[in-house]
Image 1 (cartoon, one colour):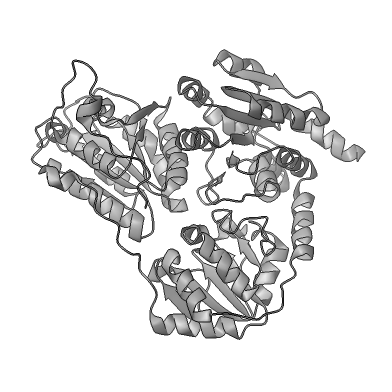
Image 2 (cartoon, rainbow, N blue to C red; image 1 turned 30 degrees about the vertical axis):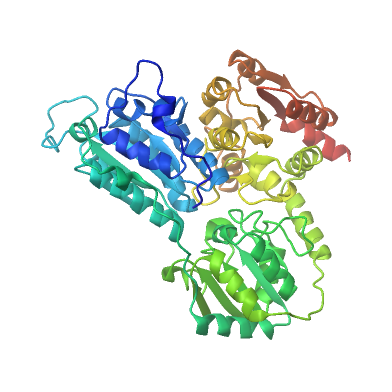
Length: 554
């Protein structure tokens, strides 16, 4: 992980009349600040105030969401823009449990997240005495979801846990962690020496073994039809992945978590459409398939399964991934940021015929359009007016996985906010808020369905309160259209899926934003362009039937 924020001396920013209390809460947050964290997400509560006491003195921006699940998703969006872990502060009991859906998301999508929560005082574990927010075993509850969960017994132990978390995020597979601080520890003077609060310096990531790199390079050097499949783990490699693709003249298709690993305007890019048949057939037909940072899971493959007829090279940070879902002939275990340059150096200068991918790119677009012509058109209309550096938030909505994923290209990694594996509703809006807070200079447009927006509608208030410029496009198909189709396919009369809708434009306006309803398909793109140029929260309500009618007419 990279430190992107200048450190601040607390004594320079302590509000008038407020003094530093050197308790465990301070030690934990000072350590996080030293790593560069300058924003936290959460909700103040009775038991977590000794965390909140230190935010202003340390120059940390509090983002008070209207639900702890939104705090977790906001932290995720923030983390993807900064390269730092998102941090959530919950209260004990219900606050922590409310955040666990976001923790599950971070685990499935391999994203860095720190959850801090107070816990019952030492000596009251499992007491069942009716204390406020009493929970049978909060650490175990979180531990069932996150990479690891620790109940600490001193400020020094808590700070050590923060350092351990950064080792995981920097050098391992990023996943969420939870630290529970008993109330008596949180509120007591810190026993941690000041020098232990300093961020540990970055060290080089792990490279692959020389013999394995040579074996992989030999396979790639002799390949006639090499293909690169890039997942979320490839985002660490950035420009080196483009150098590798160009050296091999290999087409690159990504998973949705890998979207933007190669700029999608690049002539070798096939976008993030590995879930479509033409992309899977390409991978199966490669004489050498290089998989970078992906478990090739069924959620990314939409139930498809790769069956390569050629050799397979797997590059991953963990040995356990080398043969998961797809056996490898050569396994490169290490950080993609280190291993991809190793491969480029080993391959040297290549003279290879230029790969032709334009026709395949058009085939993929046609396959995507066939899945939903109206949603494809909405996404294409949006793409026609979005600035190239726009961050696009999405949700587990049809407009996302049948529309924006395929038809809004991304030039930069982490610019498409989505959760293809955990596939939860309620992610898109808070994640977009977090991204905008982290990258205020970039446009952020959240395009999602009405069902998904209602899961997190309260976070529109957070956007207004944080005074950010954010565009929300609510694509209204009348409820849970995907589940409606699933029920129909099973011969079930649709039940529980056709939802009563609010007046979306009026609702956004009531929150303090500006809401407008799109009245015709031709109005959408101009209204979206206007919303991007406007200030504050902007919501466009887009009934899908407008585009269904327009598609039929065309």
